[in-house]
Image 1 (cartoon, one colour):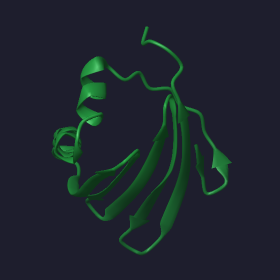
Image 2 (image 1 turned 45 degrees about the horizontal axis):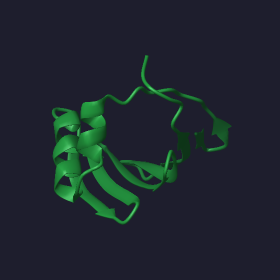
Image 3 (image 1 turned 135 degrees about the horizontal axis):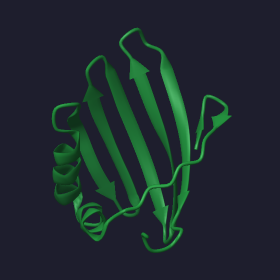
Length: 102
């Protein structure tokens, strides 16, 4: 992923339960996002159209808007974080499946 020109690499293992939650319809995905955000953020919107997922979160004095498009075992998208004073950090995300979780 790249945020404001700086590249970062991260790995995250997705459990079968997580995969089921996010591979459903908009309601199932939103329910999962709200469960994960409890206490920290509020889900303002969550939508799935075709192979694209978009959502907006409100997290204290920050707002987060994300759009991710899936292509089989990979995805790409943009995450924008806006602070209360209007500063915007844009993160370009490219992801791919590495295999089964250890």
